[in-house]
Image 1: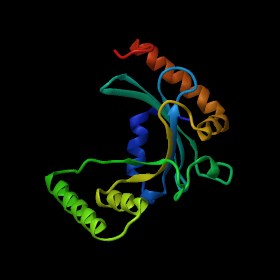
Image 2 (image 1 turned 180 degrees about the vertical axis):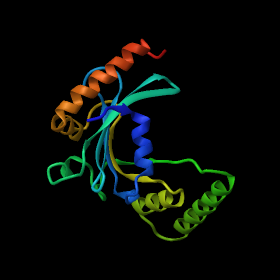
Image 3 (image 1 turned 45 degrees about the vertical axis):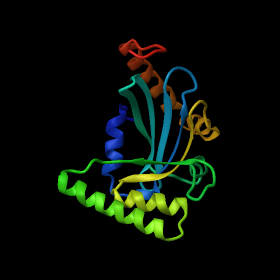
Image 4 (image 1 turned 180 degrees about the horizontal axis):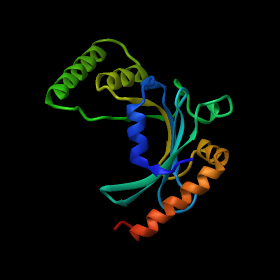
Length: 185
């Protein structure tokens, strides 16, 4: 397992040639210490584990690794499914390459919003169509708890116990190096 900067992993996710709405995520507070745990999975790509913390309000730092090459029957129930009533949505976004692309994207988004304003729609359909309009490379259902840990997060941490230990150690080294402790710097 290769530990990398968390942003490098998200760049890989953004550049994967996979079905963009096949991604699923679980996130919440770390068990101990400052920061958050985040699992991001896709059936054709596998599962990535990320650990991040806010060095200051403008600088998020962290580490991550690919912990599974695919989502098998054992991992599938640990990630939220499409159509689950509870939970939220997440998206990885990629900025437009230039002004022309930004204008095309804005026109597609405007048309998408108009279509949904004029016809009956579901929140799920609206979200997916907006993500398609802005050409999001990865989006899907997410279970997230701001001030706690979802049960699925604990189950994933136990499933990938070795990665959990290694990434915790790497993140703690970053936190110590930045001399953050429990407050921003």
